[in-house]
Amino acid sequence: MSDGETLVPLLGHEYADGRKGMDRLVHDDLDDAVRVGQAALEAGREGWVRAVLVVDAYLHLETGRFDALIVNAVEYVPERRSLQMAIPYRPGSSPEGFAVYRPKFMDVVGFDEPDYAALADAFFAGVDSHEQAAATWNAHLVDESV
Image (cartoon, rainbow, N blue to C red; front, side, top):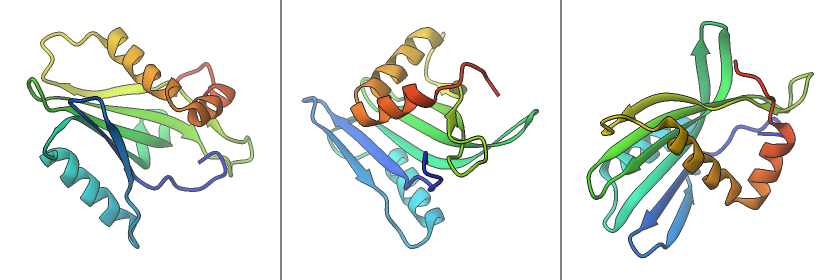
């Protein structure tokens, strides 16, 4: 993305024993890859305790249309909960160069009273756990919202 490329959909998952995995959903058609990822996320797989699907899409806001990563996360046990976030960004191919804007919560399901600060902390812990992605994120984070 920082180079102007579209992100291949990613499906990450975690098992009860702490093992983690990630699948790059490479298909000839990007829409097919997204559908495969959405179906897998919805159904879950045996042993998964949580999973996340990240896709490159457009986010439509009052201020306009933005490129964004859409993050759909599901926790399957002890009871199903889910959230959707959008991370707006400016593509690397734009004249101003690559930038990442503040994430936005789009939907939260299964939480009586969502603790958005705790959810954001968990999100950023995930960002920080990927050394290369965290370095890119931190180098290009714009302290503004769109």
